[in-house]
Image 1 (tube, rainbow, N blue to C red):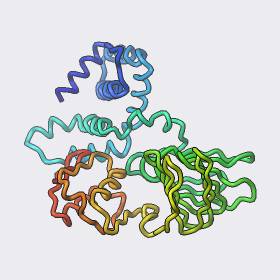
Image 2: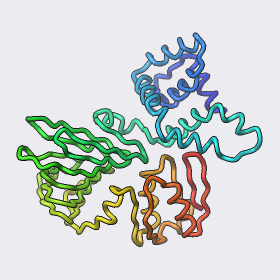
Image 3: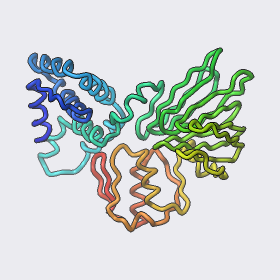
Image 4: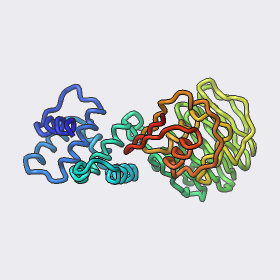
Length: 327
C-alpha cells in the first residue's frame, strides 16, 4: 500500500506535472477512484482541479470508471479476497479488495491507452475473456471474440463494417442488394450469404470461410483473392499468403466456446490463452515452451486450462490475483 499512499499524496496536493504520460494519468485516476469512495469537501475540490488540469486526466478517469464494475475486476477481487494469507493481513486488505484488483488489471495494461482511440470508434467492444453476440440491421449475425472492437453501418445506401481489432465470426444474411464490405486492417472482404471468421491482431489478418465465398482485397496493393468454403488465408504487411485448408474443428473451435490444440508447442498454447486470461501468464521454464500439447478445453476457464497444462507437463503453478507463473 506504500506506493498507493505516495501517489495519493500527489493527487491530493493538486499537483500536475507537465510531463504527465497516459500511464501516469491512469495511475492517478485509479487513486482518485479509491479516494472518491468517501471524499472530504477539500478532496472533492482537489479532484476537480486535477480533472481539469489536463485532457489526459479526463480520458483516464472515464476509462477507469467505465471498467470499475467490469468482469475482470470482479474476478481479480474475488481471487484476492479468497486467497489464503497470514491472520490479520486479509482483514486489513478486505476493505480495499476492489481498488487493489482494479490496480492489478490496469497495471497489466488490459485497458491500455495504446488502442483507446480506435476502441472509442467502435460500436461494440469485448474485454479480455468476454464474447458477445450481435445481430446487424440486415439480419446478419456476429459473434465477437475476446478483446475485440467492431462497428457497422447498414442502411438502404450501404452495408459496411469494420473489425478494429480482435476476432469475429460472421453469418451474413442473403441480400439481393449490395454485399457487406468488411474492413480488417490489411484486408477488405466483400461477402453475401456467407459464414466466415476474421481475426485481426498485430497487423495481421486471418480469414477462414466455413460456407459460401469471400472476395478479398489487400488494402496496400489492391491484390485480390477469392476464398471458398473450407479455405483459410493469412494477410500480412507483404500481402496474401497461399490459401490453406480450413480445419473447422480446430480453427473455429472458439465459436463453440472451445480451444483445441493438436501437437501444439506449449509456448503457442500459452500465447493463445493470454488472449482469454485477464492477467499475466508467465512461463519461467524455457524447456516447457517446446513441449507438444494436445487437448480440447473450455475457453471461458483459462485458469483451469493452465492448471491442466501444468499437471500434464509436471510444471509447478503459482497463482496470484491476475498473475499465473509456470515454473
